Image 1: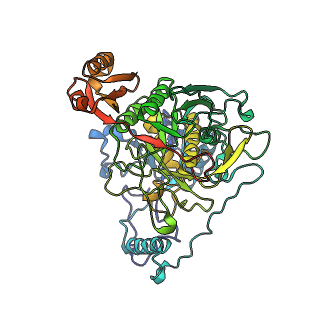
Image 2: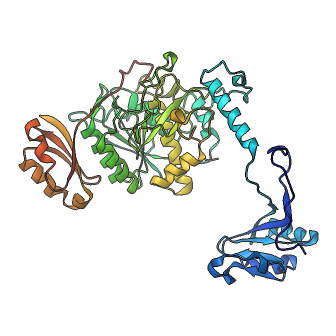
Length: 437
Length: 77
């Protein structure tokens, strides 16, 4: 039997590289059990391990390893995990059980962990040099980086480039059962691609019907909720199974105000819309107080609001812009725009330093985005953080369907599962929004 | 008349109607009472604007911001 506490090999972190060698192990194994499984019975039955120390026998479940030296295993009751000293034959039995027995989820070698040594600092230096090179500080030799092959997406016959880049094209989800509100210039309710869809409409512009006389709203609804198989052209929509709530908060001339927008949010929350997409903003750097409150109340009610970070940058001339209201609000998810190479679109606004909440949270395709347009034009390709926003809204709907998460949990899921990019977080937040696979 | 958005505080969400009537009595022309998210929108004479914040249930009074997207023909929207 192994002693309770193994000898830790004497490794010098300055000579052993952090990557390339297999991680050192103790010779014991970590066995993860399914929730509710009877670990002790399983260990005895499958591997003949009879003496199992139990964390519940220790005060506050603080296991004292000097008392467990003679045990075959130590069972951590709160975690559903056992640390097992097993002979090869016993290990074989456990691994077979892993494959066939519902009680055991996994069997893994117990790894040895070290405090990170000087290699960490070297890695940090290399990372900063690489980033400096990408941001244009070309003088440092280490800035000439050989990064992985750059991404490059293009529309094809089946999918727009944006659906490919975000993994929507291979996602099993459709947004079925999820309600997506798009607050914009309304919707072309007669567009042939939406026949048979659940569409609820409401105008918040005095004297105007919800029928989209501009196009912007129809384009955003197309990106977030367009059909799986349009009669002509590639698929351009994310949540083809979602219920659409089209709220007109911008006139056919493209203008609106807080009264109409907050009324639209009120309506969407009242109708229990899980996602509210707002491709609109003002070049106001300060956080506008009503949106702090409405964003929080919407989240509390289970509605996630996503909004466009803004198009007020021109990175071609070194102007990074700033995130305007309402996207700059702390409880509203602000979306930046990427191009087909997953680089920043030239117009995509950057987080403004010193503005609490005024930050980009996530990024999505927002350059040359093909989507629906009012008839007879039918389709159009335009750019903007307005186009990135409904990508995120539709992807949020896919995650909401898969996980059942709402509000803050849904925000966390989007952030957690986004693809980290070699771009500053002030530009992309957590990275490229990704659909569930 | 200035367009304003009144944020109703948490404690008065259930009595938003009372707050709206008090705002009217103080000179606000109330357009919408948005019960679900707790806001009252409308307009007020700039001279009366400051007095609105003293009304019980009013968390803040903010001048309305306007939003404008580019015209339909624009490549960047």
